[in-house]
Image (cartoon, rainbow, N blue to C red; front, side, top):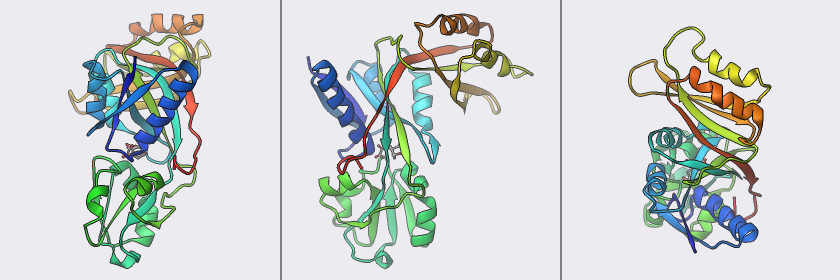
Length: 286
Ligand SMILES: O=C(O)C(=O)C[C@]1(C(=O)O)C=C[C@@H](O)C=C1
């Protein structure tokens, strides 16, 4: 059976690079074939899995420079039954693609808001007067860039090859170790792996409301690797908390912590137990 994998398209996005690495891993370790299915938004890729239109979705979660990809967290919370199967870490190396020959000719730069933010300082110093235009992905504007005068786009060197667009600046990110973590999401419950992700709301906005659920892990020496808050969208000042811990559902301290946690949470969602696959930055992966 060929697996279908939803990702943020069109071809040439960083998510596609991460997805290709995952399909290669699936082929090498499990002998499974897969096809890639591009979607216009992150929310739609996750919905495709929830409605069983696709077997898996690959979605960006967090960038080392810019932090969380909030639409991923919000959609994961809203949809039922989604489970993280694996995390992928991809080095992100942005380039400025343009058909013009000098920086002075560029008036507009297109890219995904995450990419624009990851290059903010460099853009301010090298292209201080350009208009920055957000797009749905780093590859969205590339087809029209060929005919549009005075424009550039921030995308990968792989995208430059795919769309046959010259690279005007080959290194644009503000920080050299810029990388993005992606999650592979499916419907199968995952109970093994080095990391466990979960989300919860608290029953009341009162002293200790967050400390109590966190103490459940601290008391058992379970390490927390990340915490993120998002608005519940019900009222101002009310939050959901997303946490990642180091631990597997097969370990008894983790099982005991998860048994105790509902005492201190309102809604609790376990998003899955998974390992991390680090993707090497090769010429094509950049
Ligand atoms: O637009 C793309 O190329 C994407 O794959 C999305 C995305 C993101 O949302 O974080 C992925 C990796 C980079 O951080 C920049 C953009």
